[in-house]
Length: 441
Image (cartoon, rainbow, N blue to C red; front, side, top):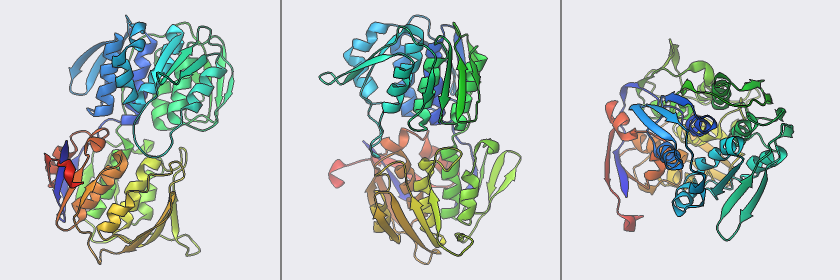
């Protein structure tokens, strides 16, 4: 077990390059199962969740050729469908939420799949019904074996149909799209998620020979084809990292340039940080954040307290709400954070309160942050990261705090952020990896 030791309060300076998008990677890498031809994918983030999925693909029989640090060639020619019944698959699949994403492509190409009940973040219930309801509409039959905790799915005759998604789930939409591309006839998906990562998947599938229209909207039409071929694909930079670095720069009074951000794909993320009073400018495709000693939260036009809430794209992503919350603790002004999608993602605020932040946790979904314009600096403490996004929020808090902080359970952070301490050290952060003593926390 490892921990981060952080000595905060130092402004940072320099350039930082965001990694490839984690949430896009889980979809794109699963899609290589749809063809036996070679698929080249670049800007793949070197993080635990993605590496586990690549390992899982290899054990399924996919040829994996790592051409460089971030570029792979995959060839899913000889897939071992018996692997599903193995204990190795059960232990691997159950520890990785992204493993659910291989079901759609396997159903489409082979007519059957099995998946252990996935694990992942403890951020509230993350149900998989949306995936399975979509597969059922296409003609799949599934059975949950309570004794083995496996979902077994039979889809020997997938047929296009009209699907109204019960929620605009990104992974649910991606999975159903991948199942539908090889189904007979036409599938229409309404209330589809339309995140840039899903658009990337659809564009890649079209390059492979799929016929998907409506990309970028919540109404997708998929005309089934007989087979798909190979392609090349480059992942977008991770918008959650970009938002995290904007927040980090403001909290630590740093001058940072975030490189190659694909600004057009960031949606309303930059404007939400603007509402917190954070200044930045676009230089080419880089975001430059100047040194700021203070930043002031906007109010609504009638003077009432600003609310920042998550919503399906093009609304604000729930993955950045914890970053907005921590950044607001050092702002001038107040904000209500409303986390609608997950009922326990705000429970990390007790650590921020211990650091001296003024936060009222109204209920599991809402927190009011009272920003005192850095009148009282956060103080370093010892804490444990509960999930990926809260972990990075606590890391940002620690970098802005006075004194020493220790964050345990950094494995959660590393599931989503590549070489985070090295990249932060490169812009001047005082952070190092130490052995974690579980008896301390």
